[in-house]
Structures are given as C-alpha cells and as structure tokens.
Length: 290
Image (cartoon, rainbow, N blue to C red; front, side, top):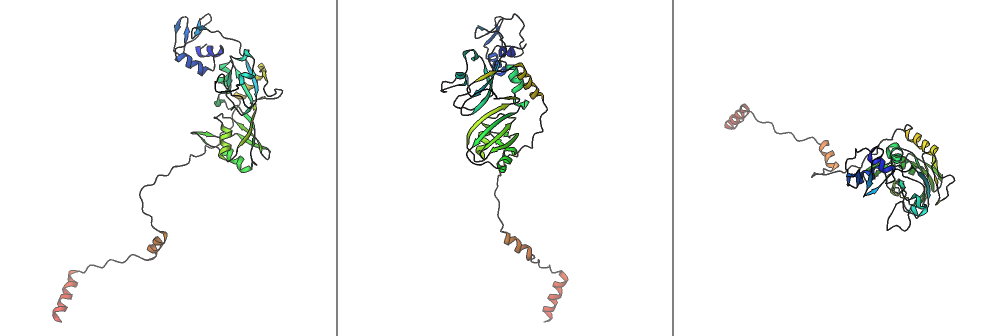
C-alpha cells in the first residue's frame, strides 16, 4: 500500500496529515528518509516516524455524543476541556472526522482509519448531516426559503439541503456541506442567534442509545451502511446564487428628465437657408433701381 495510507492505518492521522509528515522528511523506510508521496510499503519494511517504529493497528471507529463546552481537538493548551477528556486512554490515537464547535453538541466520529475517513466523509461524497437548532425568535417560511436559496461565506457557496420546522423557534437542518460554522453564520446573516445546535445524524448513524458524554464502537454493519450512503446517487444541486455586483462609476453628466422631455417636445430651430448668387444679384439690382 502507499506510504501515506500505511501511516494513516498506523493511527498517525488522516492521509493528508500523513502526506505532510512525508513531505517534511519525517518518515524513513528501511533506513532512508523519503519525500516521495508515491512510495509503496511491503510486508517487512521498517517504517519510522521521527525515528520511532510504526506499525499498522486494527481499524477502529467510534461514535461520540459530544456535550457543549468541549473543544474538538487532540491537544490545545488554550482549551479547558477537549473531547479526549471524555474518552479512555486507549482512544488517544484516534482523530476526529470533521468537527463541532465548542458550544455545539451531538454526533462526532473518531477513527484511526484515515482511508475510511477520506473515502466516506469527504464533502464530495455528500453524506447527509442533520442538525436540530434552537434560535432566539420565531422562524418562518421566508427564512426557510432564504436558507434553501443559499448565500456566500468567505468566497464559498453555502446552502442547506433541506429545512423543516419542529417548533416556533426550533428547526431541523440537513447539510451536504461542512463549511466552518456554516449554520451559525447563515442564520446570523438572517438576523437569528443560535441558542443550541445539536448534530443528531450523519448518514444512517444517529445518537440513539448514546447519552451525552458517552460513545459506542461502530460495528461492521455501521461502516457498510456509511459506504452505501456515500455511493448513493446525489440530488441535483440548486442554482448557485449570484455574487453581488460591485458597480464602478466614471465621470458623467446628469441631465434632468424634465430637460429631456422639453427638448423632445420642442423641435430644434431650423438653420437659415444659404442665399444663392442669383438671388444676391437680384437684390443688388433692386437696390440700384431704388
């Protein structure tokens, strides 16, 4: 298998983060440091990262019900509490697939299978993610239409796949995307403040039977259901909302509408006709006769 996939299977992170290790020259194979991402590993090869031997370990994926107040990170000295404070020490080699904001709650996947995370959870796969959101004031049909139409967030098109009302101030939102703080930003653009946000589903996986702060191991049938969801045909995307145009003005003269109307109403004065030579001679002879 490729070196980056081998490192991901050894629990060193996603394939992209493992590629960064290779490019930095932190990985050696059989005593030689490599930077070629196309390097392939065979059984018996001695692979080391920062001089420490690494080996593939059994793939493991867990579903965590994250409470509010925990940061989705492996290690951050500025974070008071992280999701790994909720997990036993044997989960320290897992990495999170996607993330939830510190104040957001709900379903979060952690795994050591970088290939699975890349193949199943990449935004291009369009696996549905469902959220239940409580806002600070009543949510109406016009607000739902605005979310479905989409908007621009930091140069990217942001839209929801569907939205339905669960109560006067509670809605269910389904996304195929995963832009940073997408739901909070989109609702903020409509003048709403999110009071609670819970992710209740990713594809076929739900929080059923998993209390806040608890987790469960994903079974082979769970992973197979995720693969089927990733392979399912996707619905056609709605039209992309147009970016607001920036108008640039040059120097120009404004003509009042009343002046235009008066000009159109009164015809332009006729130019005097030029007198011919014969007419000039006749006028001259008349003067002499008089």
